[in-house]
Length: 130
Image 1 (cartoon, helix red, strand yellow):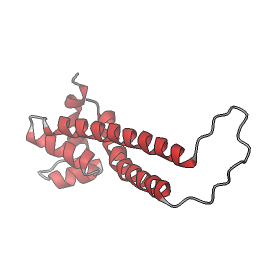
Image 2 (image 1 turned 135 degrees about the vertical axis):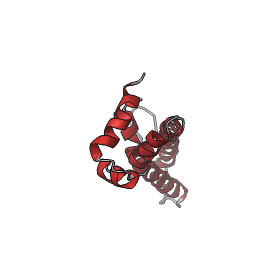
Image 3 (image 1 turned 180 degrees about the vertical axis):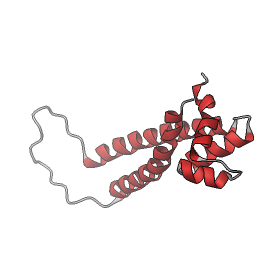
Image 4 (image 1 turned 120 degrees about the horizontal axis):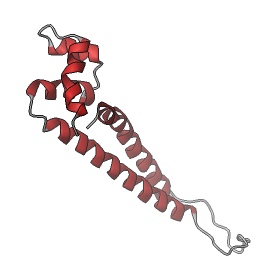
C-alpha cells in the first residue's frame, strides 16, 4: 500500500456523501409527477424511444454501483490501516488519512517531540512494502 493510495481516502470520504446526494436527487426526480405526455408525436427515426424515467432508473443504478465501488475501496484502505501491527504507525496513519490532518497536525497531535518529518519517516517503510 502506498501513501498515494492511502491519500485517496480523503477523496473517497469527500465524494461518498456527494454521490449519496446525487442518488437522492435522481430518485426524487424519478418519483416526481411528470409533465403532461403528448401521444401521437413523432419519434426519432431509429424507432428507439427512451423515457426520462427509464433514463433516470439507469442513471440511479449506475450511481449506486459507483457508490458501492467507492465504499468497498474505502473499506479496503481503512482495513489496511486497522491491520498495521505497530500502534504508533497505525495512529499516525489514522490521523493523516482517516481524520485528514496535515503532517504538521499529526506530529503535534502525536506529541513526544515528533516533527512533521519524523512522522512521515515513520510511515515511509510501511508504504514501500509490497
